[in-house]
Image (cartoon, rainbow, N blue to C red; front, side):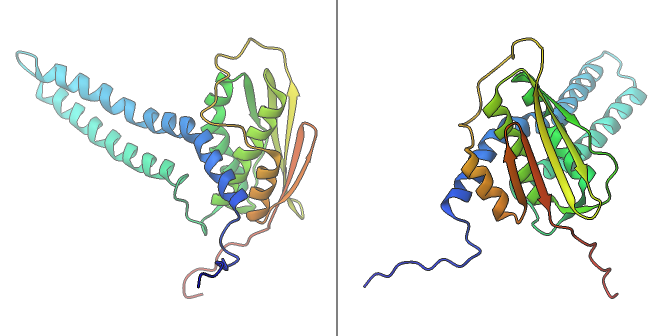
Length: 229
């Protein structure tokens, strides 16, 4: 006799799962571009080294310099790509400063938003407040996409923060004068307001959306105590 599955509370709802899938599809172009940016210099240095080796009398010092540069770039690219991949497989317990977390998200999305006719402004000053990196990586891009999809280009979106007493992020979109977007195509469908609200709620973050503004209330975290403390 079949019985209905009683999923534990930790299993996300279908709406949250749909939102996460749609968000990652929307972020795929930016993630691919970020990884390519770290890999491209390796190919350029490799081609330069190859030309030096094809010379009639290769200069050993130049060849050695090229090998060292290639090795250094390769190590850096591996680490950078591994970090980019944490967008797909995040550490749910990793904490990061609010200003650093906002910075990495805005920088990841800046180019793709620019192609669509949007300018992202990160007006979050120095903020040592700790946030869950994985949570903000889901929530902040989803909110930026929701505002941009609803309004259409050209426009500017400014992100500000306050960590006095409570940790708040505010996103405000304002129409702007500017050229037509280079591309209006998206990697996947728009996220709905219901999906974004469900996604934010699943991350334990407060959510208020009114017109062209979104405010997020983030849980206040404390640094983990050192081992053996």
